[in-house]
Length: 175
Image 1 (cartoon, helix red, strand yellow):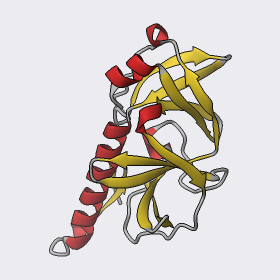
Image 2 (cartoon, rainbow, N blue to C red; image 1 turned 60 degrees about the vertical axis):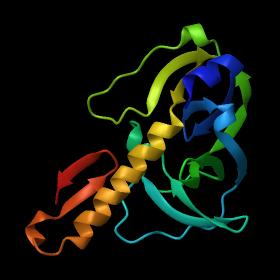
Image 3 (spheres, rainbow, N blue to C red; image 1 turned 30 degrees about the vertical axis):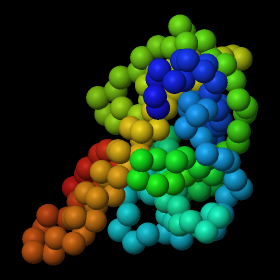
């Protein structure tokens, strides 16, 4: 997310993923569509739900749960795709519902830092009795791309079978 453009426009796309509320700079959003059929990708990390086909494009679909405290790794409760035009093409975030296009008080943002989660949440604010977590879509795309690349490198490395790791976006655990 370009914090400057979000603060300048003040417009955020506010949405939910299951029980949590998030927002992104409205200028980052290409469109929102109903969930298309998703095909899983073998050996993909938990943040990559799979690929879908939207308007003649193959689109990677990300799950937000590996980057937050949500432990769900399936598509249950997610019915929409938030399409993003990224520097390397279109990608989507699986979401539950769109709440609206809203102005969020930029002075109310509180920075979030976590030693266990990748830094894709730039801050949070209170809005209509909810805590809204502000996402950095550029950081989310980079973290997911890095995790996918890392997972596929491990899978293709067959010279040392004892070096296999179970990869969760942003986290590694021995298997």
